[in-house]
Amino acid sequence: MLGCEPVVGSLTPSKKRDYRVTNRLQEGKRPIYAVVFNFIDSRYYNVFATVGGNRVTVYQCLEGGVIAVLQSYIDDDKDESFYTVSWACDADGTPLLVAGGKDGIIRVIDAGNEKIHKSFVGHGDSVNEIRTQALRPSLVLSASKDESVRLWNVQTGICILIFAGAGGHRNEVLSVDFHPSDIYRIASCGMDNTVKIWSMKEFWTYVERSFTWEGLPSQFPTKYVQFPVLIASIHTNYVDCNRWLGDFILSKSVDNEFVLWEPKMKEQSPGEGTVDILQKYPVPDCDIWFIKLSCDFHYNAAAIGNREGKIYVWELQTSPPSLIARLSHVQSKSPIRQTAMSFDGSTILSCCEDGTIWRWDTVATA
Image (cartoon, rainbow, N blue to C red; front, side, top):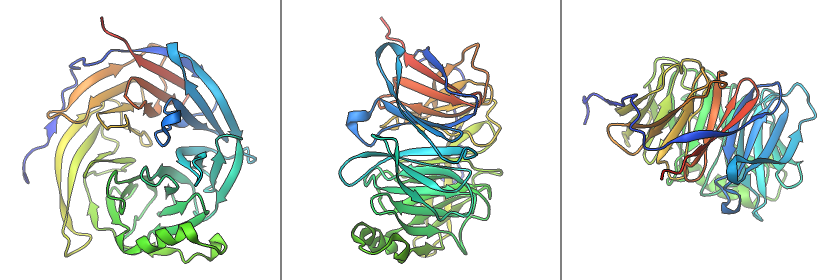
């Protein structure tokens, strides 16, 4: 495969699906940076959370485009600006929301009672993204402006691992993701223009210990992971989103596209290795940073907004890439920071710089 040109998708939609706007909410004045469905717990697949300013809000998508507000958590610090939120759960299955932002303090919120369950202090600067390990949903990763990624246990409040140091990122880390099936593997990317793949395999005993630790969380022997297993220079500018697609990676920068590529590790010499760029998915007017893509539960499709308030929905599992839909509405003109696709992809949410949330639903074809 090496040396083959990547396959570029065409922006002519092959119109696999029709979506229409079924709701638009004005949440507040402040930008909404993140929106995410709960894929952790099948009881709550239609529940989603947003963050904007110092507020975390939980909603439910109901039939006929209805969006019901379930809960709202407002941080004591009115200057806090949350940038990211992820669903997780406690030992007994209680749904938790894990939010972070400008202050660098990670809030673990009990989604049932709007109370702080735990606060994680450790990052030396703002938190740009939080992701949950779907296979063990009490493990979360945080990516920070302090150039590190941290692994936390939300049950015990322990910071288990810090991915930073000699081989770490050299600027803000903007995005992080757990591998869907290889529990040891993560990917991170950021303002140093690289994507780094890390392995937790030799540190896994510490992960296990974090569940049974009896002492204070601060006394846990947190370990530094200093060297990634692969450093990929796919992009020539900031990389603000990376997501695993099986063993492949989807990543995006500020050049109006996202890219699918295959990392090829050299087992003998960590850090080295090659990459094979497989496909490119164009997204016009997507040239500002901090715009994140989202996928449905089975990673059949990806939805991504742009700075003009439009959404592009790409089919992921086809070659060449095929555009499912291009969504635009005359009143949606503000940059879309993130989208959220529902479990089966039939609903797409977008959250915007102007404080609005938009809901799109597939139109049943006769």
